Length: 292
Image (cartoon, rainbow, N blue to C red; front, top):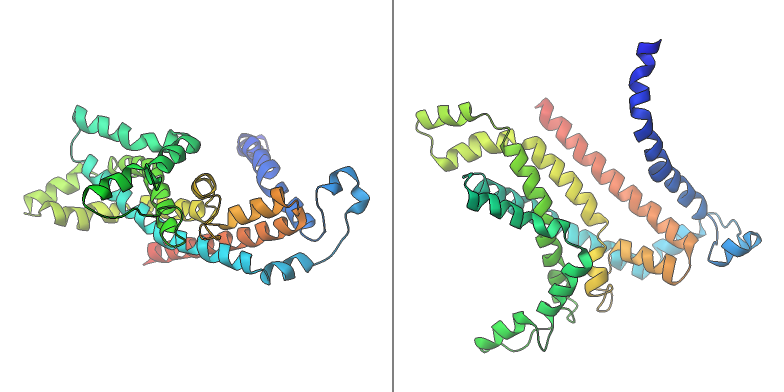
């Protein structure tokens, strides 16, 4: 009996934290989403009324919700492959040598991941500045007029996405570097003896052995982009004209600026469901790949 309970005792602290900060808030949000709760509900609980699925009906009829959803999907479709491919490419290049210069580069690529998002966005905001920004200054040297990096509805998406891709590469590059350390050198040496070149060894040996690392980075990066918030919030606050408003920013504005907690809770559950479905699909694809 004691031996049976021992594993559960070891995992119980983590499970308690998961329940307290993961499952319980979801259940609370599910309850609040069926009410008309706003900021007055904290002072006068009697003002809170059960309204059923009205918040969900209103949500799916809200053009701002659909705009935020499409924006989030667009960011994820472009951002996830970009981060995975670029991080993997940088990791492969950094892994080719272990001298001091490459060790310094590893730290250099990791710095954006540990730098405060406010500081990062502030610097990029100056770079994107229409009148005094560095990017427009460089373009002016070759006769190109000022570019509205953060004011144009279309261009602002790419400007904000570029910052997020740059910032997200650091951690994923380190993950790929760690995975590359686990590739058996015997396989690469045997391939070299057989006459395989660097490209062939990379595509036929290294990348297949990195399938789990690629899968892990793809899943975590997808979840991160579906919760995209920091960069558009600090750089554009979701503008211009809602062009960079992600689902997270939409929920933040509805819940904390407009005090519509019930409505925002309904939106958060919809976002949670979307993330859960996409993650399950990725896990099924991974399982099917393993069976194959």
